[in-house]
Image 1 (cartoon, rainbow, N blue to C red):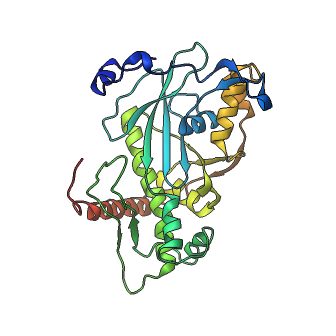
Image 2 (spheres, one colour):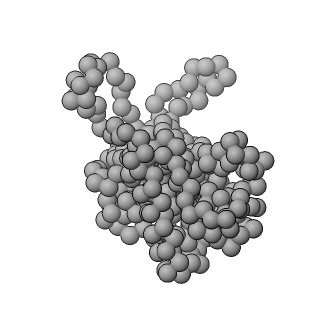
Image 3 (cartoon, helix red, strand yellow):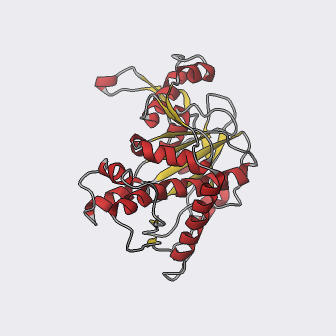
Amino acid sequence: LDWDPSLCKEFSVPQPMLPKIVSSSVELFKIKVPELEGVPLSGVLGDQQAALFGQTCFDVGEAKNTYGTGCFMLLNTGEKLVQSTHGLLTTVGYKIGNQPAVYALEGSVAIGGALVQWLRDNLNIIDDAPEVEKLALQVEDNGGVYFVPAFSGLYAPYWRDDARGVIVGLTRFANKCHIARATLEATAFQTTDVFKAMEKDAGVKLTSLKVDGGMTANKTLLQFQSDVLDIPVILPEVAETTALGAAYAAGLGVGVYKNIKELKENWKKKSEFTPEMTDKVRNKLFTNWKKAIERTLNWEQASM
């Protein structure tokens, strides 16, 4: 791994002034701060890369999705650097010791849990985040209501900054419960868009999705996610997988863990959600979601 000379030239940054690129999991130095003096620093990972590591997605084709204020999905592509042609980003996943770097495809959704906050703070439909699930469960389905939260445009895989948020399919029958359900479904639909793009870019059929983040406390969301993806959605015992991944990398770097096989054995599943939806219903829902996406476009003057 090294810095890109062409980019350094483009931004007029002398390459020697950039920091040295090091492994994600290796002893780098010992800390000198009195409270931690002598403790080795041996784990260096970015936020989503740490979650990938914490979910032990070490095999090619394994993926994780983090549900926070936004959603962030990473797919392990192994030592192969896959250039996306479907609106995703190519990134370094991690590098263990002297082993070759492992790459990933990444898809980011701007508004996930933030949409629940918007219901609470802007519309005052709910008093706290958990209430959205209670409202959603009061109706059998979304009542034909779809919510596309393109508040600042659409991120992966569309990359359209001319898009703006819409709620479509409203009738006099619709109420706040349908809007609450459409809010949760929006997160799952956006994740599905990224998921499908990843399958096309990687040329693989994903058989499961590991999930983490604050929104995974919402079981209705996870069941619907499994339904629209038509694969199992797996929730780990330790929900804070970013912190766990950093700890795994550090422990591996100093020999607390012998290898990634040991990390995989340490990882534990808490629960698993399996598809319960028919193909007919799934296809109809996703077709309507795509129609809703179309309604968001060309609202502002595009600059991308």
